[in-house]
Amino acid sequence: MPKVVIHKDGQTFEGEVKDNSNLVVRAGIKQFPYPHFSYRCGMGKCSQCASKILSGAEHLPPPNWKEQKMLGKQIEAGWRLPCQLWLHHDIELTQEGFVRDPATLAR
Image 1 (tube, helix red, strand yellow):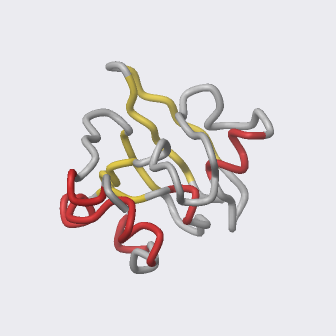
Image 2 (tube, rainbow, N blue to C red):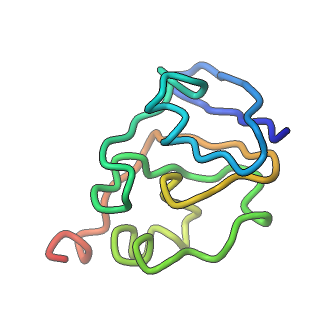
């Protein structure tokens, strides 16, 4: 079972999730990472769940078109949309410090 570590407001929250889990789906049904995880649409349209991957990025698939559209150059800095990711390996992330790429605002 993948281990998830979330850094938020100077605290660290850890939990395990079932293989092939989506963090936004889990938070939506009030399972970990709820309430430590920010999200809204769950469809890659709002970027509310944007997270900087601190470790485990090497196990994720390449960013899809929704992530590319919403995150733009932020992907190069390690930002991803967890609503578009299904976890099979351990991951460590933070949602602090995300600033939407101005080039993506008009999209």
